[in-house]
Amino acid sequence: MLTILLWPAGGTRLSLRANTRLSSTVSLPAEIPVAVVAGATMLAAGLALGHAGAGAICAVVCTSSIKVLIFSSRRVRITEGVARFAGVLSNQASVAVTVADAVSRAAPLVSGPVGEAATALASDCENVGVDVAAQRFAARVPSAVAASLADLIAISAAGGGRWTETVTVLEAEASQTAETARLFHGRVAMAMPTLTLVVLLSAGLVAGTSLVASDVGSWLAGTQGGALLLAAAVVIAAMSARVLLPARAAARYGGLP
Image (tube, rainbow, N blue to C red; front, side):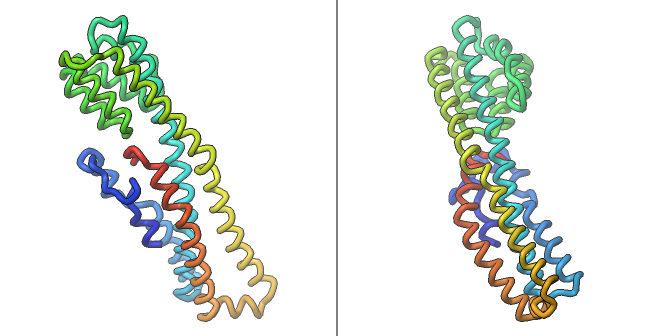
């Protein structure tokens, strides 16, 4: 359970942009309060510590699997938005007079969270300058491609780089990233609720057996039964971790909070 909770968001490497995402680093993972509630519920029902530990572990597994689905969905929205912004920016690069002009024309054509960040980027280009506006855009959009796009905007506005050709290449990269995110979401993230369902059905099967067979229920409610259920929950967590840990790292790849 601790391995699932403490596994780094980006896999086995620490984020290099921790200073811009400090709130994500210090925020309390959802698994912790859910595990505490599940364990406290078991203890309030008069069960042993083994039952509380088993309930907490199963709650962590279920919560983590749902979080993978949520993170993956957010990643798809962001990558698709960045790809859309890079596409329209590529179209405007050949006709706009300046980089700021291209950004102001492209921003209204993008929707969602990236569209809001693009609108703020266009506004910041006029108010505080392109360099600072690009830095703010990279901080608002947790995506490696968005950071590259922000660097391209800042460099091109300063008169460096081949603006039209480079933004076209970046558009292709953004489209590929969005396609990868959609593929992961459809084939991996959408299967995460099945893991939650299996855990819940297993717990329901144990509870149903306890209700039907009073002798079995009395034994399961005791210390030995609690130890058995705790061991079973540890096995479930160990088997689930092989799927959850890489899936969570992949779903949050790119700095998603």
